[in-house]
Length: 168
Image 1 (cartoon, helix red, strand yellow):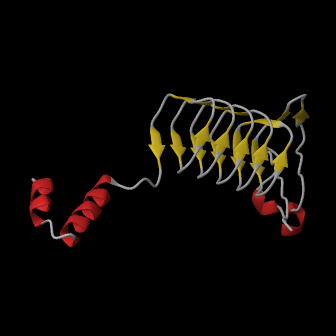
Image 2 (image 1 turned 30 degrees about the horizontal axis):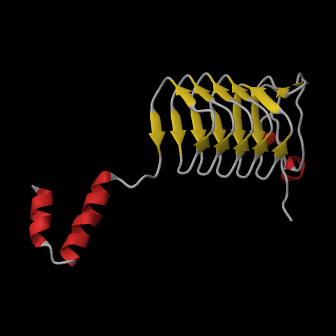
Image 3 (image 1 turned 180 degrees about the vertical axis):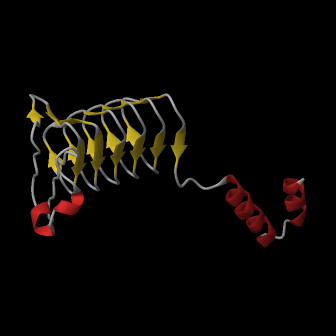
C-alpha cells in the first residue's frame, strides 16, 4: 500500500515550517489557486509528493515533482522545474529557467528551457527539447575512468605492448 501525498503550496501564503506532519497528508490548495480546463494555476510554487497522479497540468512559479509522479498535462513554470526519478509527464514542459530531470523520467511532449537542462540516465523526451543554456548529463562513465578500465583489461590479458600504444 502506497501513501499518496500531493502538495500544492504557495510561497506567498504558507511556509513549510508552519506545517505539522499530520497536516501534510493530503491536498493543500492555497488561496487564489485557479483550476482551469486542463491546468491548475498557482500563484507561487508547487510541490507534488511521491507516487502522486495528477489529472491536470501545472502552471506555477516553481514546480517540484517527487518520485513516481504522473502528471497528465503540461507543466509551465516561471522558475525551475525539478522532476524526480521514474516520473512521467504526458504533456510539454516549459520553463523560463533551468530544468532538472531525474533518472528514468519520461516526457511525452517537448521540453523547452530558457536556462540549463540537467538530466539523469535513461531520460526519454518524445517531442525533443529546446534548451538555451548548458545540457548536462549526470552519471555517465567518465572518459578517464573508461580509459583506466580499458588499460586494466589489456594488462590482464598480457598485452603490455597495446597499453604502451594506447598511452602514447
